Length: 222
Picture 1 (cartoon, rainbow, N blue to C red):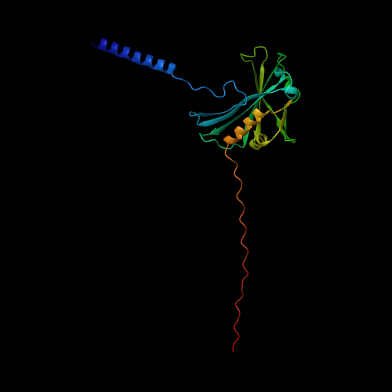
Picture 2 (tube, helix red, strand yellow):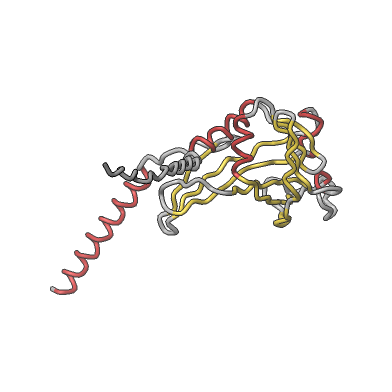
């Protein structure tokens, strides 16, 4: 009797598990709004680490002001992590760059072979950002013949705000010189809109003027 009872219970449990698995398989999953999109800003909260990730998917910077070989271009994205669910205004964000070694000989990509500096012209005003740091070199499944090198660079968020507000932004990443198109500048504006506004310092209160001290008049005796 006990063996029969355990067999029935086991069969019922298996039936419940199978029904649950089928329900999960048929459950509609939410599509990624940034899937296969360049310059798309997305926000993801990690409940295990209790932090929020704000990222802009990479855009391709083509050399020769957009008319060069795409294989010699540089991909550029932005990422920032904020503690908790509420997005806080950062002091800095991380720009990441990716370039391919078209020689496939283990050399650094031509884009950053001679220089690793990144410089901006924001409405004609020079804003050097410094040199990128090499993260590593890897061979992805989709670029079997051309290994990808990745780089990072910390950029003050004030610069991102200026890029978002500018009418024209030119960039030179290594040897790749080009400009940001309307869609990319719109992505930077979206990044800025997600962050709280920078609080301006409260105006200093004016010190009260010292009141002149009055000396009491002596009454004249009659």
